[in-house]
Amino acid sequence: MQVYDLQNVDHITTFCLGDNRPITGYYAGDMLSWVMGHVKTEGIVFITMLSNMNVLAVASLLDCSAIIFREGIVPTNEMIIKAVSEGITLLGSPGDAFDIYEGIKAYETII
Amino acid sequence: MPMAFKALVNTKMQKTFNFDIKKLNLEQAGCVSSTLKRELTMAGVDKKLIRRIAIATYEAEINMVFHSWGGTCHVQVDDDKIIIRFRDKGPGIANLQKAMMEGYSTASDIARENGFGAGMGLPNIQNACDELYIQTNNDGTDVLMKFVVNGGNSHASI
Image (cartoon, rainbow over all chains, first blue to last red; front, side, top):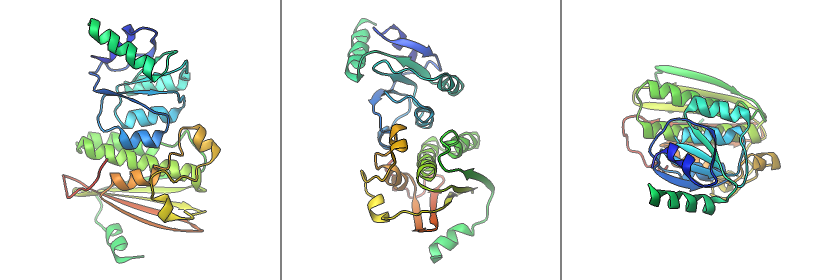
């Protein structure tokens, strides 16, 4: 599954597109230091409800492939500009982390 | 200054970077880690090492932004090692032993609102670098990190 495939998942909206990379895994969290200490691979999709520049800084230094803002959270324009420059895709969903992952798994069975 | 500390500081440098870090300036936090990530990537340094350096420096920047009254970061890049030193003005770390424990946090509300305060800052730094020296008192905190380039004998778990 590639990052751009996420756009076809139910209830997912796209804020901006970065590099279309292979997805290596998913990680949901809202405590940035915890996320930094536990995400071990690059190319992860980071699912969070935080919306500030620190989220992008962490996603960038961990080489995340995309961020999905859950439960209706939206990024600021400043975040979108930064994400484009870093090649990170920003997406959103009204659902929680479990809804999002279920949607992704359902889509994976189709493709 | 302990001898080990002194020996690390007095190494022959190849490339240096200096940064000013201001209190509660969240916009600027991440400047050290993103600059180093960019520069070290261009220099062809191992990606895993860059990642560890980015994590450790980002945590240190965040600590300085939220907990100190501001300070500086000095980076020396050598062929075989990278030395990074964060020095800030007050108030120091009240209980360093506790601060090194995962989950112990003295983060303010503003830090928590921004997604920090997990009590993982210093533990992440310790797990990311090869050697860590911290000196702290009421006047400020001096954090010195050493990263071994090209494998080395790394015990880093991040």
